Amino acid sequence: MDGVLFELSEVTVRGPDGRERISGMDARIPDHGITVLAGPSGSGKSTMLRLCNRLEVPGAGRVSYRGAPMEDMDPLELRRRVAMVFQRPTALPGSVADNLRIADPGAGEARVAAMLERVGLGGFADRRAAELSGGETQRMALARALLTDPEYVLFDEPTSSLDPSAARSIERLAAQLAEDGTPSCWVTHDLGQMRRLAHHLVVVVGGRVAQQGHLDDVLRSRSAEVASFLAGGDEE
Image (cartoon, rainbow, N blue to C red; front, side):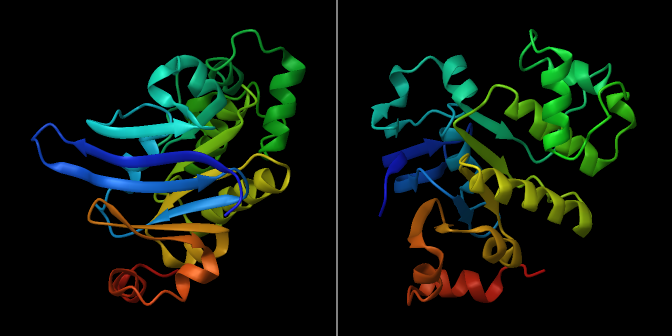
């Protein structure tokens, strides 16, 4: 495999009830393209993603970024370098421009306008954020995440509550980002979306990595766990 950006080594995460959400996980996420974390609901995909910008910390094992232990990094600096777009985006009071400046209070009008143009919201700077549609709010959240010029973007099922047209537009934005040199990691349990987006695929089952590698290689896998997921997952 090419260069590794994130590496999880024997990582275990327990929930508040003491149960293991991730158990002895070993995973590698490359430094290019789109990596998709796929698997059944509740398998640990979102927990794994949150480990990648220290919204979760392991109870055992180690997470590293560019070969450096993440535990030694300043969380705020890390989150400027590794942005995250959540499943349910937050629209804060005020205008769309006000919402973007939460990420960078010093961003000028031209920069805000350019970032909105990049995500297909040109001319929206003065609109009230609360008046946006679901797809527009998610685009605004992506623009806010991109305002810090991150090295990497984490997407936690960002289209699960959107209609198919809005979902495809967010997928195209992620694909364009990767093409322009900003790789990303995307969580989904939608097999169609997985196939459309993934260059690299990590299948997570029961808190462990069942298979990982280039998309075509994983789809040819004879692993019973992977085959079961591919047979029973959602397809759109």
